Length: 197
Image 1 (cartoon, helix red, strand yellow):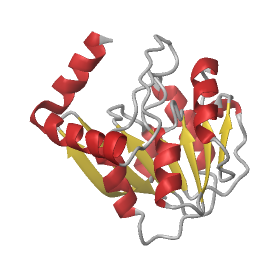
Image 2 (cartoon, rainbow, N blue to C red):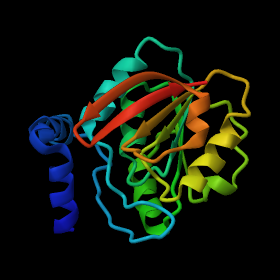
Image 3 (tube, rainbow, N blue to C red):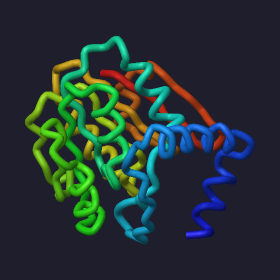
C-alpha cells in the first residue's frame, strides 16, 4: 500500500498539491463517497485506485452543456465516478461494471436507494451492451491492450454519437485511432482524454 501511495505521489510530482486540495474538498467538505483504495494484484485488471476528483471536476465541466442521459463506468471500483456524476446530474442513468466480488459488495452499499445507478458484478468484456450509452468511462480498468481493443471494437459498432473518457491510459490502443480527441488534460504522468466517434 505504501509503495502504491509513493508511486501516486511520484506520478503527479508538484501537481500532487492540487490533486490533494480537490480530494480534501470533495471528501471532507462536500462529503463525497467512493474513496476506497484496494490493491488486487490481478493479471487481468488494474488495482482499485479512485480517479482523482481534480479530473472528475474537469470532465464534468466538459459535459456540463451536453445532453447526457446514460453513462457506463467500466471497472467502477469503489463507486467514486458513479456517485460523483449522479450528484452532479441527478437525472443521468449510470451503470457500473465491477468484476471483483468484494469491491462490488462494498460499492452496492454506497448505492443506497439511488434508482439511477445500477451496478453489475460481471466482466464487461463478455457482455453485449444493449443500452444507448452517451458516455463510456474507463479509468484504466484493463491490463491487456487486447482487452481494450476488444472493448472498443465492440462499442464502436454503435452508430450513435458517443463520448469515451479514458483516465491514466498510456497504452497504444489501435481502436482509438478511429476516434477524434475532443478534450485532453495532462497532469505530469497522468491525465485523461475525451474522445468521440
